[in-house]
Length: 305
Image (cartoon, rainbow, N blue to C red; front, side, top):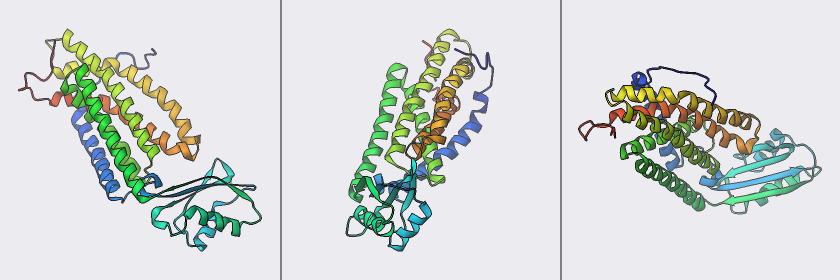
């Protein structure tokens, strides 16, 4: 594999306190995002909040500002509009708070039929999710995340030790919180697709962390006389080039998807892009330093055999 950095000797463990401060801030933002999501105060997509999504395909291009004015004039002022791939395709999303007794999709179609009679259109798709279903999807998403972290702890604990599993789970949880907090601060919409990206990120982050842990365990067996901090620091430096090359390969794929992948893939690829960056960071500055926090009274911090 390409050695883009060669042999390095950075003192990563010496910077762990600054890294913990930064990670703590990101974790707080993520926890705040979770609290707001559970209260329904975040920018939840119709998957979680309930609502309607209608995709229309017109014979001729249609301007979003004109479509928005028409909807506002007909009592649908909170509609979110997006061009969908082409200038003649329009995606209209309305959350449950804007619904009325009749089906919102039918009302949207009726409004456009009346106001744009000269520009014929067809309904490509129409989706309606009630608030109850949205809450059930929200609960299921949280359960899925919890199960994934439990699986991470069990897998890494079985492969290494319990302390490694806890460190890997905390680092992965940090990555998820960092991405979720960033989405909340930027008021990005939280959808099922974003949750899918977070679960994908959890798997990637764990894989990257396991590679570092493998080298740490190997060095523990070979360098018994060195301090734990020196052993971990050397292990991180030894796999640093591999970690960067792997992450850079994924980033080079995600950047074009984020920039030119369209509205459907944008938030998904953006969450993955941030996640890969934070996952690489956490493998070095979160997961590895957490091993140094294990109480030495519990039979030594790390096993060396």
